[in-house]
Length: 219
Length: 205
Image 1 (cartoon, one colour):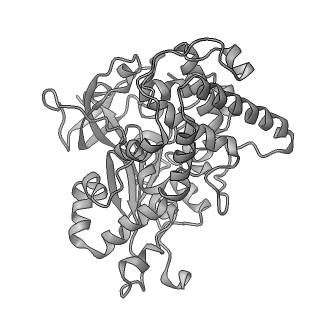
Image 2 (cartoon, one colour):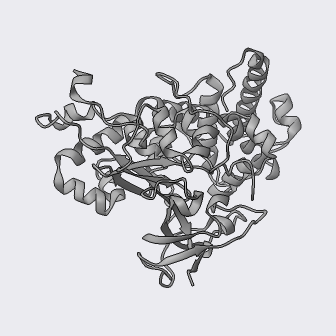
Image 3 (cartoon, each protein chain N blue to C red):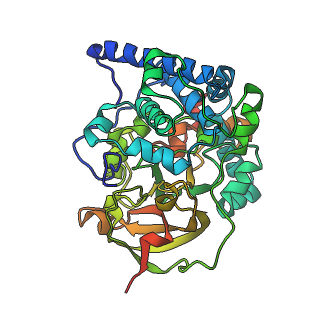
């Protein structure tokens, strides 16, 4: 979707301000949100792409006004409410009023280290051959889906070069439905001037990691 | 954007109350274990952070075989050091040299190599960096005190998929005699994102 999260090239946010000796968390609730969201992943009730879309699929003014962990918090609440895991009334009262739904797994402390170390790889057994090889010229599609996509607006309908075949990875635009599907993933290199015009240095480039359905052979 | 104005205090205490209510509800319903939440937070506070990435970089500087492995298969090379955890499942290492400077961003959200750098700082997740790193990387770098000469090419990597990028900064002048353990102290988080350079040995002595 063309949402508030798709920020590449947007102007007016001012300088990047770095905080000296920044802590990981600026309040206890931020730490709890991080821990809860990671722990809730083990419940197996949503995919990575569903959780990302729940964060990004917010009215742009609301997205801009929230701090990062607020977005995580509200997205987790949305996902759990949609699935009947919790209700708004339960959250308001901070206590259970309905029976819990069945979950895949409840993460316990003893398993945290193993679960974090295992991670969640998204490469899948390859099907067929990649359509493109390093050196190929491509053009990105010009598409503005209302659903989830990982092709930013600034890189649509642009010509670039394949610089790497990363492998066969879960494809977000489809997997956001909950039904996982994978596609070939490439590193695509764009000249900064192609993306942003003649004021850019002719030496500068931007790479994006893009799935095959985003690409067409450059005529 | 960070909320750092005084009139946000009541907003923040509302959030604090909402998070407490949520944790209590989720525990009661059996979806989470608060001890596991503690353990996750502790892991990122004490075990997973930029010191992991600094190890990778210092080894790349001192061990040519490891450096070649990192260039060819960063995932396997980094995993061989034990840094396998989430947001590090698929890694790419990019190497700065005299003619090339790499910078990593995630314009769409906050993708970041947690396994080697820990949790991202607020600026990395915030609109000023996400919006400008791709259109004005040299301006962003200047705000970090890094003004690159025109002949140096800037290569920006927008982390749009699950590939996580780690910048291998140039080994600083004057560090020739240092061993891997001492070299790790020259490798800052920002140097591994690309918003800084490795420290000179004098700066840390």
